[in-house]
Structures are given as structure tokens and as C-alpha cells.
Image (cartoon, rainbow, N blue to C red):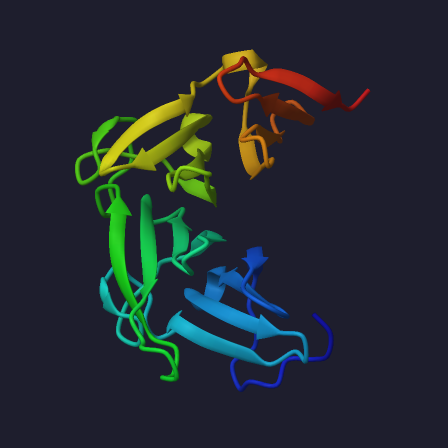
Length: 212
């Protein structure tokens, strides 16, 4: 992305981003409590949330509220998953516009109990997280997330939350970000050990790079 921001509302502590179609990215703008699009000319568009809409509220994107969103990921169908570190939720922004219409989204909660933190698997509406940060869509349409407060990686699929990588597995101490390979391996940035970890699909967590 090149150029400078041309919108009236400055970007205020962007933390993570994801590709969003041709020549655009979507960002989690923490201190503006907003999800925003930036194009290659530097134009910034807020698609949901805003500094006057801090909170937890589902519904139409123009009315929905976010509280310090931290992670974003876009599915092949254009659904944006949002990790809320302060709300302890994973939210979904689903496109609802028809072809040729302006882009509009419906915001819903994928998993978590609003404002409550903990470590609990099970039905999505009852499961609990502790400060989810990064999110990613896997090849089966599930959502993986770095649950930083629980030092784990969790997965949301078919309305159920499970733990994909348990606390301490492979020496993992404080996972803070992740990426998925085309083969389905999970790559983890472990800030607690200053290391990069890999969890192969169906395999065990191991270290692939470490300081010192």
C-alpha cells in the first residue's frame, strides 16, 4: 500500500492486517475500535466500529461496536474474522450486499462470552478465551486463533470450540501471532521464548528458529 491516509479519521494503533482482494488490506485499528480497509492509493475506509462505537454490539456493520480489535483474517468467501482481545470474543463480518451494491456487512459473534475470560472448550456460545489476538481461516473453513492469555491455539468449527495447541505444548510459552502454510501447518511466533514454532498438520509442535 502506498500513499498517505486521505480520510478524516487518522489510523490509531493498527496491530494486524490481512489481504483484502486486489490492492487492498483490512486492518484492526485498536484505539479507534474499528475495522478498516486501506487501498494501494492510501485511501482508508471504515467498514465497522469507530471511536464513538467502542463496546460489544452485533448487527449491521454501520451500527456494530468493537472493543480494541486485535486480529483480522479474510475467508475465501470474503467473511472477516475479528479477534477481540478486550472483549474475549471472536466476531464475524459477513458480506450482505448484492453484486453492484455498496459493500455492507452483518456483524455476529462466532464464539466466546462477552466480556468474560477463561479457558473452556465446548459450544461456541459457552466457550471462553483469554485475550484472543491473531486469527486465521484454515483449509476446512474453521477459524484458528492465538489465545494469548491461555498460551494456546484454539479452533472454532461447526459451532464448537476446541484447543488445537495446548498450553506448554512443544515448550510454547506466549504465542502472539501465527500463519498457516498451504499444507495446513501452523507457524507460531512465541514471544515468551523468542522463537518460531511449527505444528505440522496432525503432528507435534517443534521449534524451527530461536534467538541465541
